[in-house]
Image 1 (cartoon, one colour):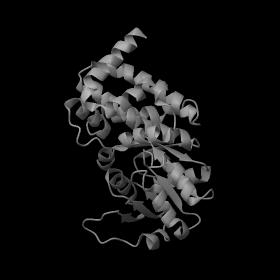
Image 2: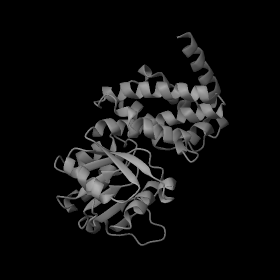
Image 3: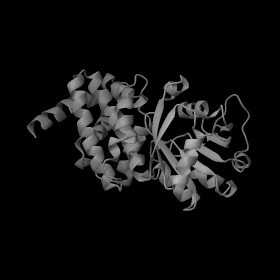
Image 4: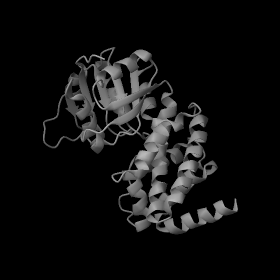
Length: 301
Protein backbone atom coordinates (compact mmCIF):
# COMPACT_ATOMS: atom_id res chain seq x y z
CA UNK A 1 0.00 0.00 0.00
CA UNK A 2 1.30 3.46 -0.86
CA UNK A 3 1.92 5.74 2.02
CA UNK A 4 0.62 9.32 2.00
CA UNK A 5 2.07 11.90 4.35
CA UNK A 6 -0.23 12.96 7.21
CA UNK A 7 0.03 15.66 9.85
CA UNK A 8 -0.03 13.90 13.21
CA UNK A 9 -0.20 15.26 16.75
CA UNK A 10 1.05 12.92 19.48
CA UNK A 11 -0.32 13.77 22.92
CA UNK A 12 2.12 12.48 25.52
CA UNK A 13 5.74 11.47 25.12
CA UNK A 14 6.11 8.60 27.55
CA UNK A 15 7.05 5.07 26.51
CA UNK A 16 4.15 4.45 24.14
CA UNK A 17 4.29 7.99 22.79
CA UNK A 18 7.92 7.47 21.81
CA UNK A 19 6.98 4.14 20.24
CA UNK A 20 4.33 5.81 18.07
CA UNK A 21 6.85 8.49 17.14
CA UNK A 22 9.31 5.80 16.05
CA UNK A 23 6.69 4.06 13.89
CA UNK A 24 5.39 7.22 12.24
CA UNK A 25 8.27 9.69 12.01
CA UNK A 26 9.81 8.58 8.72
CA UNK A 27 6.71 9.16 6.58
CA UNK A 28 4.64 11.76 8.41
CA UNK A 29 4.90 15.26 9.86
CA UNK A 30 4.76 14.94 13.65
CA UNK A 31 4.03 17.40 16.42
CA UNK A 32 4.70 16.28 19.99
CA UNK A 33 2.77 17.69 22.94
CA UNK A 34 3.74 17.01 26.56
CA UNK A 35 1.69 17.98 29.59
CA UNK A 36 4.82 18.97 31.48
CA UNK A 37 7.60 19.65 28.95
CA UNK A 38 11.08 19.63 30.45
CA UNK A 39 13.39 20.63 27.64
CA UNK A 40 11.19 22.13 24.92
CA UNK A 41 8.89 25.17 25.01
CA UNK A 42 5.17 24.31 25.25
CA UNK A 43 3.16 24.39 22.06
CA UNK A 44 -0.21 26.05 21.57
CA UNK A 45 -2.31 22.89 21.73
CA UNK A 46 -5.53 24.32 20.33
CA UNK A 47 -3.77 25.91 17.39
CA UNK A 48 -1.72 22.79 16.67
CA UNK A 49 -4.75 20.50 16.82
CA UNK A 50 -6.63 22.49 14.18
CA UNK A 51 -4.04 21.55 11.54
CA UNK A 52 -3.88 17.79 12.19
CA UNK A 53 -5.10 14.83 10.18
CA UNK A 54 -4.66 12.44 13.11
CA UNK A 55 -4.27 12.85 16.88
CA UNK A 56 -2.78 10.04 18.98
CA UNK A 57 -3.71 10.01 22.66
CA UNK A 58 -0.58 8.42 24.13
CA UNK A 59 -1.27 9.14 27.78
CA UNK A 60 -3.34 7.55 30.57
CA UNK A 61 -7.11 7.37 30.24
CA UNK A 62 -7.77 9.93 32.99
CA UNK A 63 -7.01 13.10 30.95
CA UNK A 64 -8.70 11.87 27.74
CA UNK A 65 -12.10 13.46 28.35
CA UNK A 66 -10.71 16.82 29.44
CA UNK A 67 -8.25 17.09 26.57
CA UNK A 68 -10.77 15.95 23.96
CA UNK A 69 -13.36 18.42 25.28
CA UNK A 70 -10.75 21.17 25.13
CA UNK A 71 -9.87 20.33 21.52
CA UNK A 72 -13.31 19.49 20.14
CA UNK A 73 -14.17 22.84 18.55
CA UNK A 74 -10.72 23.13 16.99
CA UNK A 75 -10.61 19.76 15.22
CA UNK A 76 -11.25 19.31 11.54
CA UNK A 77 -14.31 17.21 10.74
CA UNK A 78 -12.17 14.44 9.25
CA UNK A 79 -9.58 14.41 12.04
CA UNK A 80 -9.04 10.88 13.36
CA UNK A 81 -8.49 10.49 17.13
CA UNK A 82 -6.63 7.34 18.17
CA UNK A 83 -6.07 6.14 21.74
CA UNK A 84 -3.65 3.54 23.07
CA UNK A 85 -4.61 3.99 26.75
CA UNK A 86 -5.21 0.72 28.61
CA UNK A 87 -7.04 1.99 31.65
CA UNK A 88 -10.13 3.73 33.01
CA UNK A 89 -10.55 7.41 33.78
CA UNK A 90 -11.75 8.78 37.11
CA UNK A 91 -15.38 8.34 36.05
CA UNK A 92 -14.84 4.66 35.24
CA UNK A 93 -14.83 5.22 31.47
CA UNK A 94 -12.60 3.45 28.98
CA UNK A 95 -10.55 5.70 26.71
CA UNK A 96 -12.96 5.06 23.84
CA UNK A 97 -15.96 5.96 25.99
CA UNK A 98 -14.30 9.16 27.21
CA UNK A 99 -13.41 10.23 23.65
CA UNK A 100 -16.88 9.44 22.32
CA UNK A 101 -18.59 11.40 25.08
CA UNK A 102 -16.26 14.37 24.65
CA UNK A 103 -16.21 14.50 20.84
CA UNK A 104 -19.73 13.43 19.94
CA UNK A 105 -21.26 10.66 17.80
CA UNK A 106 -19.87 11.93 14.49
CA UNK A 107 -16.24 11.89 15.63
CA UNK A 108 -13.76 9.51 14.02
CA UNK A 109 -12.33 7.42 16.86
CA UNK A 110 -10.08 4.36 17.00
CA UNK A 111 -8.21 2.40 19.66
CA UNK A 112 -5.08 0.26 19.28
CA UNK A 113 -4.55 -2.60 21.75
CA UNK A 114 -2.21 -5.58 21.67
CA UNK A 115 1.42 -6.63 22.22
CA UNK A 116 3.20 -3.31 21.68
CA UNK A 117 6.14 -3.08 24.07
CA UNK A 118 7.71 0.32 23.49
CA UNK A 119 11.32 -0.77 23.93
CA UNK A 120 10.92 -3.55 21.36
CA UNK A 121 9.23 -1.26 18.86
CA UNK A 122 12.03 1.30 19.16
CA UNK A 123 14.55 -1.51 18.71
CA UNK A 124 12.94 -2.36 15.38
CA UNK A 125 11.03 -5.45 16.51
CA UNK A 126 7.56 -6.24 15.22
CA UNK A 127 4.43 -5.35 17.18
CA UNK A 128 0.78 -6.34 16.86
CA UNK A 129 -2.51 -4.64 17.65
CA UNK A 130 -6.21 -4.87 17.18
CA UNK A 131 -7.55 -1.67 15.68
CA UNK A 132 -10.99 -0.97 17.08
CA UNK A 133 -12.99 1.26 14.74
CA UNK A 134 -16.63 1.60 13.84
CA UNK A 135 -15.93 2.33 10.18
CA UNK A 136 -13.96 0.29 7.65
CA UNK A 137 -12.76 3.55 6.12
CA UNK A 138 -11.12 4.48 9.40
CA UNK A 139 -9.32 1.14 9.48
CA UNK A 140 -8.06 1.76 5.95
CA UNK A 141 -6.62 5.08 7.15
CA UNK A 142 -4.79 3.32 9.97
CA UNK A 143 -3.34 0.77 7.56
CA UNK A 144 -2.08 3.60 5.41
CA UNK A 145 -0.61 5.45 8.41
CA UNK A 146 1.46 2.43 9.43
CA UNK A 147 2.23 1.08 5.96
CA UNK A 148 5.86 -0.03 5.92
CA UNK A 149 6.15 0.12 9.72
CA UNK A 150 6.62 -3.08 11.78
CA UNK A 151 3.13 -2.84 13.32
CA UNK A 152 0.64 -5.47 12.17
CA UNK A 153 -3.01 -4.53 12.56
CA UNK A 154 -6.18 -6.60 12.85
CA UNK A 155 -9.54 -4.89 12.48
CA UNK A 156 -12.47 -5.23 14.84
CA UNK A 157 -15.63 -3.21 15.36
CA UNK A 158 -15.86 -4.48 18.95
CA UNK A 159 -14.34 -1.36 20.51
CA UNK A 160 -15.95 -2.05 23.88
CA UNK A 161 -14.71 -5.63 23.96
CA UNK A 162 -11.07 -4.96 23.16
CA UNK A 163 -11.07 -1.91 25.45
CA UNK A 164 -12.11 -3.99 28.43
CA UNK A 165 -9.76 -6.84 27.50
CA UNK A 166 -6.84 -4.37 27.44
CA UNK A 167 -7.96 -2.73 30.68
CA UNK A 168 -8.40 -5.96 32.63
CA UNK A 169 -5.17 -7.65 31.60
CA UNK A 170 -3.18 -5.05 33.56
CA UNK A 171 -5.08 -5.95 36.72
CA UNK A 172 -4.53 -9.68 36.29
CA UNK A 173 -0.84 -9.20 35.43
CA UNK A 174 -0.28 -8.09 39.03
CA UNK A 175 -1.31 -11.55 40.22
CA UNK A 176 1.22 -13.25 37.94
CA UNK A 177 3.95 -11.12 39.51
CA UNK A 178 2.83 -12.14 43.00
CA UNK A 179 2.90 -15.83 42.06
CA UNK A 180 6.34 -15.56 40.44
CA UNK A 181 7.86 -13.73 43.40
CA UNK A 182 6.47 -16.41 45.71
CA UNK A 183 8.18 -19.03 43.55
CA UNK A 184 4.96 -20.92 42.82
CA UNK A 185 6.32 -22.17 39.51
CA UNK A 186 5.34 -22.61 35.90
CA UNK A 187 2.37 -24.86 36.71
CA UNK A 188 0.83 -22.03 38.71
CA UNK A 189 1.43 -19.64 35.82
CA UNK A 190 -0.43 -22.02 33.51
CA UNK A 191 -3.34 -22.24 35.93
CA UNK A 192 -3.50 -18.46 36.27
CA UNK A 193 -3.47 -18.02 32.50
CA UNK A 194 -6.38 -20.44 32.00
CA UNK A 195 -8.47 -19.01 34.83
CA UNK A 196 -7.68 -15.41 33.88
CA UNK A 197 -8.96 -15.95 30.36
CA UNK A 198 -12.14 -17.60 31.69
CA UNK A 199 -12.81 -14.71 34.06
CA UNK A 200 -12.04 -12.07 31.44
CA UNK A 201 -14.42 -13.76 29.02
CA UNK A 202 -17.25 -13.59 31.56
CA UNK A 203 -16.55 -9.98 32.47
CA UNK A 204 -16.06 -8.67 28.94
CA UNK A 205 -19.16 -10.34 27.53
CA UNK A 206 -21.12 -9.14 30.55
CA UNK A 207 -20.06 -5.59 29.71
CA UNK A 208 -21.19 -5.90 26.10
CA UNK A 209 -18.09 -7.29 24.37
CA UNK A 210 -18.22 -10.09 21.84
CA UNK A 211 -17.65 -13.73 22.80
CA UNK A 212 -14.07 -14.78 22.10
CA UNK A 213 -12.63 -11.26 21.90
CA UNK A 214 -10.38 -11.89 24.92
CA UNK A 215 -8.67 -14.71 22.98
CA UNK A 216 -7.24 -12.24 20.48
CA UNK A 217 -4.42 -9.70 20.56
CA UNK A 218 -5.92 -7.18 23.01
CA UNK A 219 -6.58 -9.93 25.57
CA UNK A 220 -4.54 -13.15 25.44
CA UNK A 221 -1.82 -11.70 23.22
CA UNK A 222 -1.16 -8.70 25.43
CA UNK A 223 -1.56 -10.72 28.64
CA UNK A 224 1.20 -13.15 27.62
CA UNK A 225 3.42 -10.25 26.64
CA UNK A 226 2.83 -8.43 29.92
CA UNK A 227 3.37 -11.39 32.25
CA UNK A 228 6.52 -12.64 30.50
CA UNK A 229 8.26 -9.35 29.69
CA UNK A 230 11.17 -8.41 31.94
CA UNK A 231 10.18 -4.75 31.69
CA UNK A 232 6.49 -5.21 32.58
CA UNK A 233 5.44 -2.61 35.14
CA UNK A 234 2.38 -4.52 36.36
CA UNK A 235 4.19 -7.84 36.69
CA UNK A 236 6.92 -6.11 38.70
CA UNK A 237 4.28 -4.43 40.82
CA UNK A 238 3.05 -7.86 41.90
CA UNK A 239 6.60 -8.84 42.80
CA UNK A 240 7.00 -5.70 44.91
CA UNK A 241 3.84 -6.55 46.83
CA UNK A 242 5.43 -9.79 48.00
CA UNK A 243 8.73 -8.07 48.80
CA UNK A 244 6.95 -5.56 51.00
CA UNK A 245 7.71 -2.57 48.79
CA UNK A 246 4.41 -0.78 49.16
CA UNK A 247 5.50 2.80 48.48
CA UNK A 248 4.90 2.85 44.73
CA UNK A 249 1.79 0.78 44.10
CA UNK A 250 0.69 2.82 41.10
CA UNK A 251 -0.23 2.12 37.50
CA UNK A 252 -3.19 1.63 35.19
CA UNK A 253 -4.01 -1.75 36.71
CA UNK A 254 -4.18 -0.35 40.26
CA UNK A 255 -6.29 2.60 39.13
CA UNK A 256 -8.56 0.28 37.14
CA UNK A 257 -9.27 -1.83 40.21
CA UNK A 258 -10.09 1.29 42.23
CA UNK A 259 -12.48 2.56 39.56
CA UNK A 260 -14.23 -0.82 39.21
CA UNK A 261 -14.82 -0.77 42.96
CA UNK A 262 -15.68 2.95 43.26
CA UNK A 263 -18.18 3.01 40.40
CA UNK A 264 -19.51 -0.54 40.92
CA UNK A 265 -18.98 -1.35 37.25
CA UNK A 266 -19.49 -5.02 38.08
CA UNK A 267 -19.15 -7.22 41.15
CA UNK A 268 -15.57 -8.56 41.48
CA UNK A 269 -16.72 -11.10 44.07
CA UNK A 270 -18.08 -13.23 41.22
CA UNK A 271 -14.56 -13.47 39.74
CA UNK A 272 -12.17 -15.09 42.26
CA UNK A 273 -8.85 -14.07 40.71
CA UNK A 274 -9.88 -10.45 40.22
CA UNK A 275 -11.27 -10.40 43.75
CA UNK A 276 -7.92 -11.75 44.98
CA UNK A 277 -6.06 -8.89 43.27
CA UNK A 278 -8.30 -6.44 45.10
CA UNK A 279 -7.49 -8.08 48.44
CA UNK A 280 -3.77 -8.03 47.63
CA UNK A 281 -3.87 -4.32 46.85
CA UNK A 282 -5.92 -3.58 49.97
CA UNK A 283 -3.70 -5.65 52.28
CA UNK A 284 -0.31 -5.98 50.56
CA UNK A 285 1.45 -6.98 53.77
CA UNK A 286 -0.58 -10.21 53.81
CA UNK A 287 0.22 -11.24 50.22
CA UNK A 288 1.74 -14.58 51.19
CA UNK A 289 -1.15 -15.65 53.41
CA UNK A 290 -3.75 -14.39 50.94
CA UNK A 291 -2.26 -16.51 48.18
CA UNK A 292 -1.94 -19.53 50.46
CA UNK A 293 -5.57 -19.22 51.55
CA UNK A 294 -6.69 -18.87 47.95
CA UNK A 295 -4.89 -22.04 46.93
CA UNK A 296 -6.37 -23.92 49.90
CA UNK A 297 -9.88 -22.81 48.98
CA UNK A 298 -9.30 -23.66 45.31
CA UNK A 299 -8.17 -27.18 46.20
CA UNK A 300 -11.28 -27.73 48.26
CA UNK A 301 -13.67 -26.28 45.69
